[in-house]
Image 1 (spheres, helix red, strand yellow):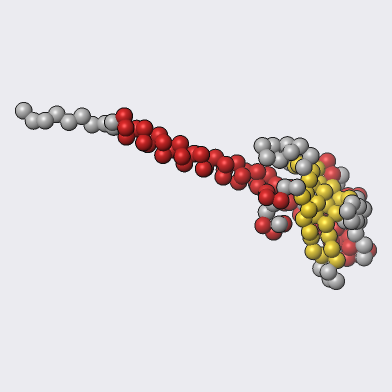
Image 2: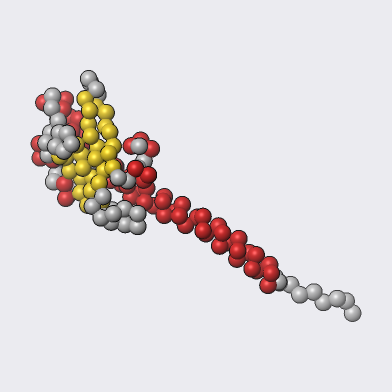
Length: 143
């Protein structure tokens, strides 16, 4: 008779595999959460694209920045929203033509957190400066 071999894993091998999987999850979960929160902030920046266009067109036609959504010719702030964005509106603070993006709460984003897109006239073009308490979550184009 030959030697009988049992196929399978030893308890030590299973424990080592669980430790490795656990270590991977410890690093993967925060990265995934950060990725999803960045995507939520980017949604607001994306929704503001129409407002940016409206502010730019208003500035070209009237040589001034609009004070609110109706002057810019876009819908009310509450109508520009999504699952993660509460509203996108045009305001005068800190400067006329500023686009205010207000977010709904989530894991790393406080309820009512905002991103301000402040326009600056660069003689023929408009530069947009981002101001926010969500600096670490802003897309690279807005940092």
